[in-house]
Image (cartoon, rainbow, N blue to C red; front, side, top):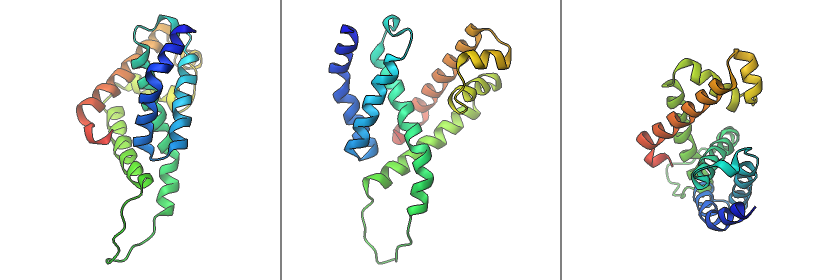
Length: 169
């Protein structure tokens, strides 16, 4: 409990600022920050995390990505044609949507660059919402192997985004 309180005091302002920059929406930023902490509390091995702040940042990045997957389509429906004489600045949501599109493209490229089995297991977890136990049963692998593939996938995406995505984050 003390470790979580300390993490919250140290990281919540940073996360809130990160989400505000990326979403342009104070309420959405606050919701995403709170959801990040909810998810880290749900990690069964929270007490054993060597670097909970880094793990929290990974959760935050994943939440941001998930946040923009659905709204991207809704945003595209809201676009209106502008005449050539229009001089309208991009609203923060539109800038965030453009950044989300760039991040989504990088994410898809990182997935394409993964080993097939690692990609399959990662997508079963993140896209299909399957638990590690369900994945283990589906692909007939040990729990350790499923966890190994998930760690490889997350590390690969992290490296790929670090190497290719400075202006998309």
